[in-house]
Length: 227
Image 1: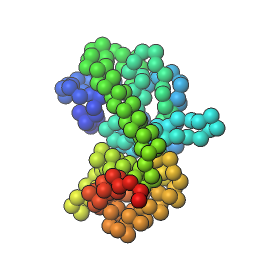
Image 2 (image 1 turned 30 degrees about the vertical axis):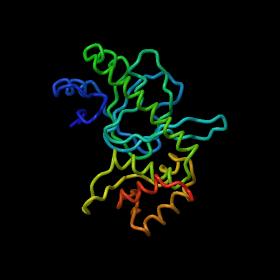
Image 3 (image 1 turned 45 degrees about the horizontal axis):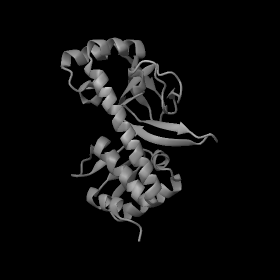
C-alpha cells in the first residue's frame, strides 16, 4: 500500500488518482547515511517517505552542517522538483533505513498537468516549510537549550509520535544525536537533559527511541524562560 492519502501534497485527490500517481513512482530502499540530493543541485526528483527518517540541512562555508528539519513517514522531500527549473534549497540524507517513493521531475510535471491541485498543494507546503524554518531560527536566537529541546520533541511527537502500550505515551523512533543536530547542540547536552527529564517522569529514553510520557509538563518546559 502506498498510503498517499496521508500526505499533504496529495490532499484533495481521490483513490483512483492516488493509485495512478503511486504507479508512476519508483520504490527505493536506502540504508542510513545515503545522500538523496544536495543543496543547489538541479531538482530532479521528489521523494515520499514511507518509513524511516531524513534530515535536511545546509552546509556552512567551513563544512559544518546546520540541520533545518527532519522528515519522517507521510512527508515529502525535494518538493522543489514540482516547479520547473528549480534547484534544491537543502541537502537531504537518510538517518535511518528508509523506504521511499520517488518521482522524476518529468513524471511529476505530467502528473501536475493531469492534476493541477498538486501545484497548489506544493506551493502551500513550501510556504509552510519557510514559516517553520523562521520559527526554528527565532527559537535558536531567543530560547535556551531546554526550551528548544522541549519544543522540538513536542512538534515531532505531535507529527510522528506512535502510541505505546501505555495510555497517552508517544514513542519517537529517533536517535539522540539526530535530535541534537536539529536544535544545534551537542549529543552530550541532549543526553544530559533527557536523563534529567526521565528522572522526573517526563520522557523515557530507550535504544533508538524517545518516549513522551507527560506532554503537558514538556509543554511547560517549552514555555518557561530561564530564571
